[in-house]
Length: 289
Length: 234
View 1 (cartoon, rainbow over the protein chains, first blue to last red):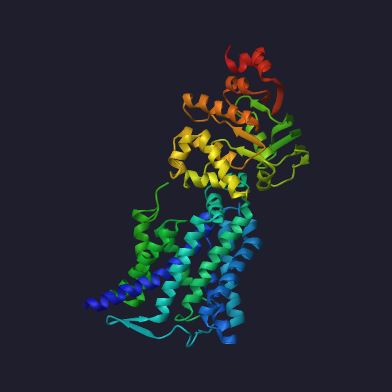
View 2 (tube, rainbow over the protein chains, first blue to last red):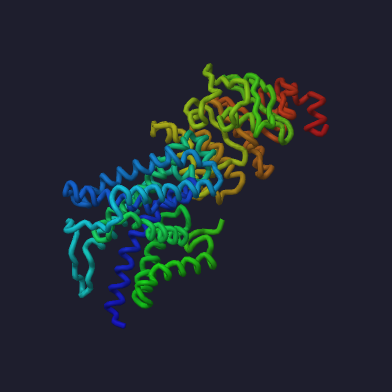
Protein backbone atom coordinates (compact mmCIF):
# COMPACT_ATOMS: atom_id res chain seq x y z
CA UNK A 1 0.00 0.00 0.00
CA UNK A 2 0.84 3.61 -0.40
CA UNK A 3 3.06 5.04 2.36
CA UNK A 4 1.31 8.37 2.23
CA UNK A 5 -2.08 6.85 2.91
CA UNK A 6 -0.66 4.84 5.81
CA UNK A 7 0.83 7.99 7.33
CA UNK A 8 -2.44 9.82 6.80
CA UNK A 9 -4.36 7.04 8.53
CA UNK A 10 -1.88 6.82 11.36
CA UNK A 11 -2.07 10.55 12.04
CA UNK A 12 -5.87 10.65 11.99
CA UNK A 13 -5.79 7.74 14.47
CA UNK A 14 -3.57 9.78 16.77
CA UNK A 15 -5.86 12.80 16.46
CA UNK A 16 -9.02 10.91 17.48
CA UNK A 17 -7.04 8.94 20.06
CA UNK A 18 -6.21 12.16 21.90
CA UNK A 19 -9.94 12.86 22.25
CA UNK A 20 -10.52 9.29 23.50
CA UNK A 21 -7.82 9.93 26.06
CA UNK A 22 -9.63 12.98 27.43
CA UNK A 23 -12.91 11.04 27.78
CA UNK A 24 -11.01 8.24 29.50
CA UNK A 25 -9.23 10.59 31.89
CA UNK A 26 -12.62 11.71 33.19
CA UNK A 27 -13.73 8.13 33.75
CA UNK A 28 -10.39 7.31 35.34
CA UNK A 29 -10.49 10.23 37.80
CA UNK A 30 -13.88 9.16 39.15
CA UNK A 31 -12.86 5.51 39.40
CA UNK A 32 -9.46 6.35 40.85
CA UNK A 33 -10.89 8.43 43.68
CA UNK A 34 -13.84 6.30 44.71
CA UNK A 35 -13.75 3.02 42.79
CA UNK A 36 -17.12 3.60 41.19
CA UNK A 37 -17.45 2.79 37.50
CA UNK A 38 -19.51 5.50 35.84
CA UNK A 39 -21.68 3.89 33.16
CA UNK A 40 -23.26 7.29 32.46
CA UNK A 41 -19.92 8.73 31.36
CA UNK A 42 -20.83 8.67 27.66
CA UNK A 43 -23.97 10.61 28.54
CA UNK A 44 -21.88 13.43 30.01
CA UNK A 45 -20.17 13.54 26.62
CA UNK A 46 -23.55 13.50 24.86
CA UNK A 47 -24.80 16.37 27.04
CA UNK A 48 -21.62 18.31 26.26
CA UNK A 49 -22.36 17.86 22.56
CA UNK A 50 -25.97 19.00 22.95
CA UNK A 51 -24.91 21.98 25.04
CA UNK A 52 -22.59 22.96 22.21
CA UNK A 53 -25.32 22.30 19.63
CA UNK A 54 -28.08 24.29 21.32
CA UNK A 55 -25.90 27.26 22.11
CA UNK A 56 -24.98 27.23 18.43
CA UNK A 57 -28.50 26.64 17.09
CA UNK A 58 -30.32 29.05 19.41
CA UNK A 59 -27.80 31.83 19.96
CA UNK A 60 -25.44 31.34 17.00
CA UNK A 61 -22.53 30.98 19.43
CA UNK A 62 -19.58 29.02 18.14
CA UNK A 63 -18.68 25.77 19.95
CA UNK A 64 -15.17 27.03 20.66
CA UNK A 65 -16.56 30.18 22.25
CA UNK A 66 -19.04 28.28 24.40
CA UNK A 67 -16.55 25.62 25.50
CA UNK A 68 -15.81 27.29 28.86
CA UNK A 69 -19.54 27.56 29.56
CA UNK A 70 -20.16 23.89 28.74
CA UNK A 71 -17.18 22.97 30.88
CA UNK A 72 -18.75 24.77 33.85
CA UNK A 73 -22.22 23.33 33.13
CA UNK A 74 -20.91 19.77 33.02
CA UNK A 75 -18.71 20.31 36.08
CA UNK A 76 -21.80 21.49 37.94
CA UNK A 77 -23.88 18.60 36.63
CA UNK A 78 -21.24 16.07 37.69
CA UNK A 79 -21.08 17.57 41.19
CA UNK A 80 -24.90 17.58 41.44
CA UNK A 81 -25.11 13.97 40.27
CA UNK A 82 -22.70 13.12 43.06
CA UNK A 83 -24.58 15.15 45.65
CA UNK A 84 -28.02 13.71 44.90
CA UNK A 85 -27.33 10.12 43.85
CA UNK A 86 -23.78 8.84 44.21
CA UNK A 87 -23.33 10.23 47.73
CA UNK A 88 -25.99 7.78 48.93
CA UNK A 89 -24.19 4.73 47.53
CA UNK A 90 -20.56 5.51 48.28
CA UNK A 91 -20.33 2.59 50.71
CA UNK A 92 -22.97 0.41 49.02
CA UNK A 93 -22.17 -2.93 47.35
CA UNK A 94 -20.68 -2.69 43.86
CA UNK A 95 -23.87 -4.03 42.28
CA UNK A 96 -25.93 -1.14 43.69
CA UNK A 97 -23.35 1.31 42.40
CA UNK A 98 -23.53 -0.22 38.93
CA UNK A 99 -27.33 0.00 38.97
CA UNK A 100 -27.25 3.66 39.93
CA UNK A 101 -24.81 4.80 37.24
CA UNK A 102 -26.52 2.54 34.70
CA UNK A 103 -29.84 4.12 35.69
CA UNK A 104 -28.35 7.58 35.22
CA UNK A 105 -27.26 6.55 31.74
CA UNK A 106 -30.81 5.53 30.84
CA UNK A 107 -32.24 8.67 32.43
CA UNK A 108 -29.98 11.03 30.47
CA UNK A 109 -30.34 9.12 27.22
CA UNK A 110 -34.12 8.86 27.57
CA UNK A 111 -34.33 12.51 28.55
CA UNK A 112 -32.39 13.52 25.45
CA UNK A 113 -34.64 11.40 23.24
CA UNK A 114 -37.75 12.83 24.85
CA UNK A 115 -36.83 16.50 24.84
CA UNK A 116 -34.56 16.76 21.81
CA UNK A 117 -35.89 13.96 19.55
CA UNK A 118 -33.75 11.06 18.36
CA UNK A 119 -32.68 12.99 15.22
CA UNK A 120 -29.08 13.41 14.10
CA UNK A 121 -27.99 17.01 14.57
CA UNK A 122 -24.90 18.75 13.31
CA UNK A 123 -23.14 22.02 13.94
CA UNK A 124 -22.78 23.56 10.47
CA UNK A 125 -20.12 26.06 9.44
CA UNK A 126 -18.54 26.59 12.80
CA UNK A 127 -15.32 28.59 13.12
CA UNK A 128 -13.42 25.36 12.79
CA UNK A 129 -14.30 23.70 9.51
CA UNK A 130 -12.68 22.74 6.26
CA UNK A 131 -9.46 20.94 5.53
CA UNK A 132 -5.82 21.68 5.56
CA UNK A 133 -3.17 20.09 3.38
CA UNK A 134 0.22 19.47 4.98
CA UNK A 135 2.88 17.82 2.81
CA UNK A 136 0.21 16.25 0.63
CA UNK A 137 -1.71 14.90 3.66
CA UNK A 138 -5.28 16.02 4.23
CA UNK A 139 -6.56 16.81 7.70
CA UNK A 140 -9.91 18.08 8.85
CA UNK A 141 -9.36 21.30 10.78
CA UNK A 142 -12.06 20.27 13.32
CA UNK A 143 -10.11 17.07 13.99
CA UNK A 144 -6.89 18.97 14.56
CA UNK A 145 -8.57 21.51 16.84
CA UNK A 146 -10.30 18.71 18.76
CA UNK A 147 -7.02 16.87 19.27
CA UNK A 148 -5.21 20.03 20.40
CA UNK A 149 -8.06 20.93 22.74
CA UNK A 150 -8.01 17.41 24.18
CA UNK A 151 -4.27 17.60 24.79
CA UNK A 152 -4.61 20.95 26.54
CA UNK A 153 -7.51 19.66 28.68
CA UNK A 154 -5.71 16.43 29.57
CA UNK A 155 -2.60 18.44 30.44
CA UNK A 156 -4.69 20.72 32.62
CA UNK A 157 -6.11 17.74 34.53
CA UNK A 158 -2.60 16.34 34.99
CA UNK A 159 -1.37 19.70 36.24
CA UNK A 160 -4.31 20.03 38.61
CA UNK A 161 -3.81 16.59 40.12
CA UNK A 162 -0.02 16.73 40.39
CA UNK A 163 0.72 20.37 41.04
CA UNK A 164 -2.06 21.84 43.17
CA UNK A 165 -2.98 21.51 46.81
CA UNK A 166 -6.52 20.40 45.97
CA UNK A 167 -5.18 17.89 43.45
CA UNK A 168 -2.96 16.42 46.15
CA UNK A 169 -6.03 16.15 48.39
CA UNK A 170 -7.79 14.30 45.56
CA UNK A 171 -4.93 11.82 45.32
CA UNK A 172 -4.71 11.47 49.08
CA UNK A 173 -8.42 10.64 49.26
CA UNK A 174 -7.99 8.13 46.43
CA UNK A 175 -5.17 6.37 48.28
CA UNK A 176 -6.59 6.41 51.81
CA UNK A 177 -9.88 8.16 52.48
CA UNK A 178 -9.67 7.87 56.26
CA UNK A 179 -6.08 9.08 56.47
CA UNK A 180 -7.08 12.03 54.27
CA UNK A 181 -9.83 12.89 56.75
CA UNK A 182 -7.22 12.89 59.48
CA UNK A 183 -5.44 15.61 57.49
CA UNK A 184 -8.66 17.64 57.51
CA UNK A 185 -9.63 16.75 53.94
CA UNK A 186 -13.43 16.43 53.60
CA UNK A 187 -14.06 13.27 51.54
CA UNK A 188 -17.49 14.32 50.31
CA UNK A 189 -16.19 17.54 48.79
CA UNK A 190 -13.37 15.65 47.12
CA UNK A 191 -15.81 13.10 45.70
CA UNK A 192 -18.00 15.91 44.35
CA UNK A 193 -14.88 17.47 42.83
CA UNK A 194 -13.95 14.16 41.16
CA UNK A 195 -17.42 13.86 39.64
CA UNK A 196 -17.34 17.47 38.49
CA UNK A 197 -13.92 16.99 36.96
CA UNK A 198 -14.88 13.66 35.36
CA UNK A 199 -18.06 15.05 33.81
CA UNK A 200 -16.23 18.18 32.64
CA UNK A 201 -13.64 16.06 30.79
CA UNK A 202 -16.38 14.19 28.96
CA UNK A 203 -18.28 17.42 28.33
CA UNK A 204 -15.26 19.21 26.86
CA UNK A 205 -14.60 16.18 24.65
CA UNK A 206 -18.25 16.39 23.55
CA UNK A 207 -17.86 20.05 22.55
CA UNK A 208 -14.65 19.30 20.64
CA UNK A 209 -16.38 16.44 18.80
CA UNK A 210 -19.52 18.46 18.06
CA UNK A 211 -17.86 20.32 15.18
CA UNK A 212 -17.45 17.19 13.08
CA UNK A 213 -19.45 14.38 14.66
CA UNK A 214 -23.23 13.92 14.43
CA UNK A 215 -25.08 14.64 17.67
CA UNK A 216 -27.78 12.22 18.83
CA UNK A 217 -29.01 10.81 22.15
CA UNK A 218 -27.06 7.51 21.93
CA UNK A 219 -23.82 9.08 20.73
CA UNK A 220 -22.16 8.49 24.12
CA UNK A 221 -22.44 4.70 23.98
CA UNK A 222 -19.45 3.99 21.76
CA UNK A 223 -17.30 6.67 23.33
CA UNK A 224 -18.02 5.28 26.79
CA UNK A 225 -17.12 1.76 25.65
CA UNK A 226 -13.88 3.00 24.12
CA UNK A 227 -13.14 4.98 27.28
CA UNK A 228 -13.43 1.76 29.29
CA UNK A 229 -10.92 0.11 26.97
CA UNK A 230 -8.55 3.08 27.23
CA UNK A 231 -8.77 3.17 31.02
CA UNK A 232 -8.19 -0.58 31.25
CA UNK A 233 -5.14 -0.31 28.98
CA UNK A 234 -3.72 2.76 30.66
CA UNK A 235 -4.26 1.59 34.22
CA UNK A 236 -6.99 2.99 36.45
CA UNK A 237 -6.44 6.44 37.89
CA UNK A 238 -3.44 7.15 35.67
CA UNK A 239 -3.61 10.30 33.51
CA UNK A 240 -0.45 9.80 31.46
CA UNK A 241 -1.36 6.12 31.00
CA UNK A 242 -4.74 7.16 29.62
CA UNK A 243 -3.08 9.54 27.18
CA UNK A 244 -0.85 6.84 25.66
CA UNK A 245 -3.60 4.24 25.72
CA UNK A 246 -5.97 6.69 23.99
CA UNK A 247 -3.49 7.18 21.18
CA UNK A 248 -2.95 3.41 20.86
CA UNK A 249 -6.70 2.76 20.70
CA UNK A 250 -7.22 5.55 18.16
CA UNK A 251 -4.44 4.24 15.92
CA UNK A 252 -5.53 0.60 16.22
CA UNK A 253 -9.10 1.56 15.42
CA UNK A 254 -8.26 3.60 12.36
CA UNK A 255 -5.57 1.24 11.00
CA UNK A 256 -7.80 -1.80 11.61
CA UNK A 257 -10.67 -0.04 9.90
CA UNK A 258 -8.39 0.72 7.00
CA UNK A 259 -6.96 -2.77 6.56
CA UNK A 260 -9.87 -4.97 7.59
CA UNK A 261 -12.88 -2.77 7.03
CA UNK A 262 -14.52 0.17 8.82
CA UNK A 263 -17.44 -1.99 10.02
CA UNK A 264 -15.00 -3.98 12.20
CA UNK A 265 -13.39 -0.94 13.86
CA UNK A 266 -14.91 -1.49 17.29
CA UNK A 267 -14.44 -5.26 17.12
CA UNK A 268 -10.73 -4.72 16.52
CA UNK A 269 -10.42 -2.35 19.47
CA UNK A 270 -12.25 -4.80 21.72
CA UNK A 271 -10.03 -7.65 20.55
CA UNK A 272 -7.01 -5.59 21.55
CA UNK A 273 -8.72 -5.00 24.89
CA UNK A 274 -9.31 -8.73 25.46
CA UNK A 275 -5.72 -9.50 24.50
CA UNK A 276 -4.37 -7.00 27.02
CA UNK A 277 -6.73 -8.24 29.75
CA UNK A 278 -5.44 -11.77 29.20
CA UNK A 279 -1.76 -10.86 29.12
CA UNK A 280 -1.50 -7.82 31.39
CA UNK A 281 -4.62 -7.53 33.58
CA UNK A 282 -3.16 -4.49 35.37
CA UNK A 283 -3.16 -2.56 32.07
CA UNK A 284 -0.31 -1.74 29.70
CA UNK A 285 0.97 1.11 31.88
CA UNK A 286 -0.49 -0.07 35.17
CA UNK A 287 1.71 -1.65 37.78
CA UNK A 288 0.72 -4.87 39.54
CA UNK A 289 -0.36 -4.17 43.13
CA UNK B 1 -7.30 20.01 77.53
CA UNK B 2 -8.99 16.77 76.48
CA UNK B 3 -11.62 15.02 78.47
CA UNK B 4 -13.41 11.80 77.56
CA UNK B 5 -16.54 11.55 79.68
CA UNK B 6 -17.99 8.05 80.04
CA UNK B 7 -17.60 7.21 76.38
CA UNK B 8 -18.86 3.97 74.88
CA UNK B 9 -18.21 2.67 71.37
CA UNK B 10 -19.84 -0.25 69.61
CA UNK B 11 -19.12 -1.88 66.25
CA UNK B 12 -22.33 -3.15 64.65
CA UNK B 13 -23.98 -3.27 68.05
CA UNK B 14 -21.10 -5.14 69.68
CA UNK B 15 -19.63 -2.97 72.44
CA UNK B 16 -15.87 -2.32 72.22
CA UNK B 17 -15.50 0.41 74.84
CA UNK B 18 -17.61 0.76 77.98
CA UNK B 19 -17.83 3.88 80.06
CA UNK B 20 -14.25 5.09 79.58
CA UNK B 21 -13.25 8.40 81.14
CA UNK B 22 -9.81 9.79 80.42
CA UNK B 23 -8.31 13.23 80.92
CA UNK B 24 -5.27 14.68 79.21
CA UNK B 25 -3.80 17.91 80.56
CA UNK B 26 -1.76 20.47 78.70
CA UNK B 27 1.90 19.45 78.32
CA UNK B 28 1.52 15.84 79.46
CA UNK B 29 2.43 12.56 77.84
CA UNK B 30 -0.43 10.24 78.65
CA UNK B 31 -0.04 6.56 77.80
CA UNK B 32 -2.88 4.15 77.11
CA UNK B 33 -1.62 0.63 77.64
CA UNK B 34 -3.09 -2.84 77.57
CA UNK B 35 -3.09 -5.89 75.35
CA UNK B 36 -4.42 -6.15 71.82
CA UNK B 37 -8.14 -5.72 71.26
CA UNK B 38 -8.79 -3.88 74.50
CA UNK B 39 -10.04 -0.68 72.90
CA UNK B 40 -6.96 1.54 72.82
CA UNK B 41 -7.09 2.24 69.09
CA UNK B 42 -10.87 2.60 69.19
CA UNK B 43 -10.47 5.29 71.82
CA UNK B 44 -7.96 7.26 69.73
CA UNK B 45 -10.11 6.88 66.62
CA UNK B 46 -13.10 8.22 68.54
CA UNK B 47 -11.11 11.29 69.59
CA UNK B 48 -10.10 11.84 65.96
CA UNK B 49 -13.74 11.46 64.90
CA UNK B 50 -13.34 8.25 62.89
CA UNK B 51 -15.51 6.26 65.34
CA UNK B 52 -18.80 7.63 66.54
CA UNK B 53 -19.84 7.24 70.15
CA UNK B 54 -22.69 5.11 71.43
CA UNK B 55 -22.77 7.34 74.51
CA UNK B 56 -20.64 9.81 76.43
CA UNK B 57 -19.00 13.09 75.52
CA UNK B 58 -15.65 14.28 74.22
CA UNK B 59 -14.58 17.77 75.25
CA UNK B 60 -11.48 19.38 73.74
CA UNK B 61 -10.24 22.77 74.86
CA UNK B 62 -13.59 23.49 76.53
CA UNK B 63 -15.56 22.69 73.36
CA UNK B 64 -17.88 19.68 73.05
CA UNK B 65 -16.66 17.93 69.88
CA UNK B 66 -18.67 14.72 70.28
CA UNK B 67 -20.65 15.30 67.07
CA UNK B 68 -17.95 17.12 65.09
CA UNK B 69 -16.98 15.48 61.78
CA UNK B 70 -13.49 13.96 61.58
CA UNK B 71 -12.22 16.36 58.92
CA UNK B 72 -13.09 19.38 61.08
CA UNK B 73 -11.02 18.24 64.05
CA UNK B 74 -7.47 18.84 62.74
CA UNK B 75 -8.17 22.58 62.53
CA UNK B 76 -8.90 22.55 66.29
CA UNK B 77 -5.47 21.07 66.93
CA UNK B 78 -6.33 17.38 67.19
CA UNK B 79 -4.04 15.10 65.25
CA UNK B 80 -3.90 11.32 65.08
CA UNK B 81 -0.92 9.41 63.71
CA UNK B 82 -2.89 6.24 63.05
CA UNK B 83 -2.12 2.61 63.62
CA UNK B 84 -0.19 1.15 60.69
CA UNK B 85 0.96 4.69 59.76
CA UNK B 86 -1.50 5.08 56.86
CA UNK B 87 0.78 7.17 54.69
CA UNK B 88 -0.21 8.06 51.13
CA UNK B 89 2.00 5.33 49.69
CA UNK B 90 2.21 6.50 46.08
CA UNK B 91 3.02 10.12 46.90
CA UNK B 92 6.44 11.54 47.69
CA UNK B 93 7.69 12.20 51.22
CA UNK B 94 7.35 15.92 50.59
CA UNK B 95 3.76 15.66 49.36
CA UNK B 96 2.81 13.55 52.36
CA UNK B 97 4.20 16.28 54.59
CA UNK B 98 2.40 19.04 52.71
CA UNK B 99 -0.88 17.14 53.01
CA UNK B 100 -0.32 17.09 56.76
CA UNK B 101 -0.59 20.87 56.62
CA UNK B 102 -3.78 20.79 54.52
CA UNK B 103 -5.86 22.88 56.92
CA UNK B 104 -3.18 25.57 57.27
CA UNK B 105 -2.81 28.54 54.94
CA UNK B 106 0.22 30.49 56.15
CA UNK B 107 2.98 29.32 53.81
CA UNK B 108 5.75 30.85 55.94
CA UNK B 109 4.61 28.97 59.03
CA UNK B 110 4.16 25.77 57.04
CA UNK B 111 7.76 26.06 55.83
CA UNK B 112 8.87 26.51 59.45
CA UNK B 113 7.03 23.33 60.45
CA UNK B 114 8.69 21.50 57.59
CA UNK B 115 12.12 22.67 58.72
CA UNK B 116 11.28 21.49 62.24
CA UNK B 117 10.28 18.03 60.93
CA UNK B 118 13.47 17.80 58.85
CA UNK B 119 15.45 18.80 61.93
CA UNK B 120 13.85 16.00 63.96
CA UNK B 121 14.20 13.45 61.16
CA UNK B 122 17.06 14.46 58.82
CA UNK B 123 16.58 11.27 56.79
CA UNK B 124 13.22 12.64 55.58
CA UNK B 125 14.94 15.67 54.11
CA UNK B 126 17.37 13.41 52.29
CA UNK B 127 14.51 11.30 50.96
CA UNK B 128 12.01 14.05 50.31
CA UNK B 129 11.59 13.16 46.62
CA UNK B 130 11.17 9.45 47.35
CA UNK B 131 7.79 7.69 47.09
CA UNK B 132 6.55 7.09 50.65
CA UNK B 133 5.65 3.44 50.05
CA UNK B 134 9.28 2.60 49.27
CA UNK B 135 10.65 3.85 52.62
CA UNK B 136 11.71 1.40 55.33
CA UNK B 137 9.33 0.79 58.24
CA UNK B 138 11.21 3.12 60.55
CA UNK B 139 11.40 5.90 57.98
CA UNK B 140 7.68 5.49 57.29
CA UNK B 141 6.98 5.94 60.98
CA UNK B 142 9.10 9.06 61.04
CA UNK B 143 7.17 10.36 58.06
CA UNK B 144 3.85 9.55 59.73
CA UNK B 145 4.88 11.49 62.84
CA UNK B 146 6.30 14.28 60.68
CA UNK B 147 3.07 14.48 58.69
CA UNK B 148 1.20 14.75 61.97
CA UNK B 149 3.44 17.56 63.19
CA UNK B 150 2.84 19.47 59.93
CA UNK B 151 -0.70 20.12 61.16
CA UNK B 152 0.84 22.05 64.08
CA UNK B 153 -1.46 20.23 66.50
CA UNK B 154 -2.12 21.03 70.14
CA UNK B 155 -2.69 17.35 70.89
CA UNK B 156 -0.69 14.68 69.06
CA UNK B 157 -2.07 11.16 69.33
CA UNK B 158 0.24 8.31 68.37
CA UNK B 159 -1.11 4.82 67.82
CA UNK B 160 1.60 2.15 68.15
CA UNK B 161 4.54 4.20 66.87
CA UNK B 162 6.85 1.22 67.39
CA UNK B 163 4.71 -1.07 65.20
CA UNK B 164 6.78 -2.96 62.64
CA UNK B 165 10.09 -1.15 63.10
CA UNK B 166 13.55 -2.31 64.14
CA UNK B 167 14.14 -2.39 67.94
CA UNK B 168 17.02 0.07 67.65
CA UNK B 169 14.70 2.58 66.00
CA UNK B 170 12.00 2.11 68.65
CA UNK B 171 14.27 3.83 71.15
CA UNK B 172 15.01 6.62 68.70
CA UNK B 173 11.29 7.16 67.97
CA UNK B 174 10.32 7.17 71.64
CA UNK B 175 13.17 9.59 72.42
CA UNK B 176 11.92 11.87 69.68
CA UNK B 177 8.39 11.71 71.11
CA UNK B 178 9.81 12.85 74.44
CA UNK B 179 11.70 15.61 72.67
CA UNK B 180 8.52 16.77 70.87
CA UNK B 181 6.70 16.79 74.20
CA UNK B 182 9.48 18.82 75.80
CA UNK B 183 8.92 21.49 73.16
CA UNK B 184 5.41 21.94 74.59
CA UNK B 185 3.19 19.56 72.63
CA UNK B 186 0.69 17.42 74.52
CA UNK B 187 0.84 13.71 73.64
CA UNK B 188 -1.55 10.82 73.97
CA UNK B 189 0.30 7.59 73.29
CA UNK B 190 -0.91 4.07 72.63
CA UNK B 191 1.92 1.60 72.80
CA UNK B 192 2.43 -2.16 73.01
CA UNK B 193 5.80 -1.60 74.55
CA UNK B 194 4.29 -1.01 78.01
CA UNK B 195 7.55 -0.52 79.87
CA UNK B 196 8.98 2.11 77.53
CA UNK B 197 5.63 3.86 77.22
CA UNK B 198 5.19 4.19 80.98
CA UNK B 199 8.79 5.31 81.40
CA UNK B 200 8.23 8.39 79.28
CA UNK B 201 4.60 9.01 80.30
CA UNK B 202 3.56 11.49 82.96
CA UNK B 203 0.40 9.47 83.51
CA UNK B 204 -1.06 6.24 82.20
CA UNK B 205 -4.32 4.37 81.88
CA UNK B 206 -4.59 0.60 81.60
CA UNK B 207 -7.41 -0.61 79.37
CA UNK B 208 -8.77 -4.10 79.63
CA UNK B 209 -11.73 -5.43 77.62
CA UNK B 210 -12.85 -1.91 76.90
CA UNK B 211 -12.65 -0.56 80.46
CA UNK B 212 -10.13 1.50 82.38
CA UNK B 213 -8.94 -0.90 85.09
CA UNK B 214 -6.02 1.12 86.45
CA UNK B 215 -4.67 4.62 86.19
CA UNK B 216 -1.95 6.66 87.79
CA UNK B 217 1.41 8.26 87.21
CA UNK B 218 3.81 6.45 84.90
CA UNK B 219 6.10 5.59 87.79
CA UNK B 220 3.32 4.23 90.01
CA UNK B 221 2.01 2.04 87.21
CA UNK B 222 5.50 0.69 86.51
CA UNK B 223 5.77 -0.35 90.16
CA UNK B 224 2.29 -1.86 90.29
CA UNK B 225 2.55 -5.59 90.83
CA UNK B 226 -0.40 -6.47 88.58
CA UNK B 227 1.13 -4.54 85.71
CA UNK B 228 4.48 -6.12 86.32
CA UNK B 229 2.89 -9.55 86.19
CA UNK B 230 0.61 -8.92 83.20
CA UNK B 231 2.79 -6.81 80.92
CA UNK B 232 6.35 -6.62 82.11
CA UNK B 233 6.99 -10.31 82.80
CA UNK B 234 8.39 -9.62 86.25
